[in-house]
Length: 327
Ligand code: SF4
Image (cartoon, rainbow, N blue to C red; front, side, top):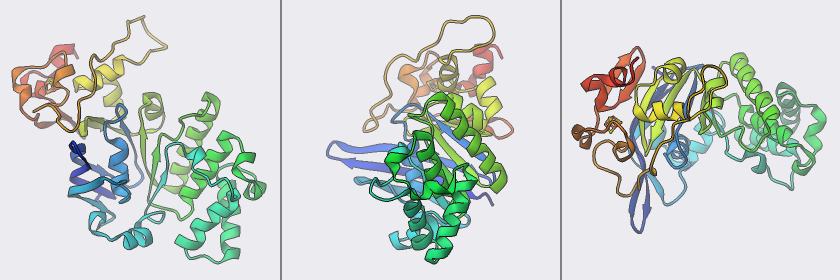
């Protein structure tokens, strides 16, 4: 059994105008020790998807249906208390978006890591203090950082503190939501290398959420592309980057400048993502898709185009991207 199995998950936000279908019928699996990147434009539902795994969807959001099995336990059936005791930090931990600012300014870095160890891990004060030093050293920081306040740390140091917190109770899965946003490129590269090293050493599974395809390419072995609350393509990174089969993925890849090869004009995706209160019928990408057909007014069926490479697009049933784009 996979470490994480999400089946037909629907998570909606209930607004006065109607439910916003932020995650709509998403199924996904994550094997132990793998790094999965989830990419898509802002508002496509990627953050809501991972908040659902931790049972932390903010109100007025709610998991409407589906299941999320983490190591054999359906977290959608757990109470808040059970989620706190059994899942968060222990099984699944999270490096939040804007993590650099998620540290409490009035506590030292060490006190904040210690809190996780004592309240969620049941450690004594002495045990927790020793573990704080170990954790700081594991992310390349000196133990003296433990007694510093967040305002005394650089952006990269704060991010490392947050990563050490996420690793504190040795979870099976670490979710990193835009872990390098707001960092300069040099620190970005250091943080990505650190995450790669820790993942290898500790054998954890990582879910990486980002709109930055370069970050996904650097870290992920598998990629899921989300559009308007749905996963439209999933597969090994190499396939997604070099042989995309969904028009949205194809245009996303074409919109990234390349450093090597002949000069090409950058593609862009016309229009706006749809309103998720009233999404288009059938394929949600249809209003922006240059290859839309009549059949696209029906929900696209998912097809496995190669081993572990799945795509939800009618083109696959009518010749495929391969025929349209010549690969
Ligand atoms: Fe385009 Fe149709 Fe494929 Fe949607 S199903 S991406 S509209 S071709």
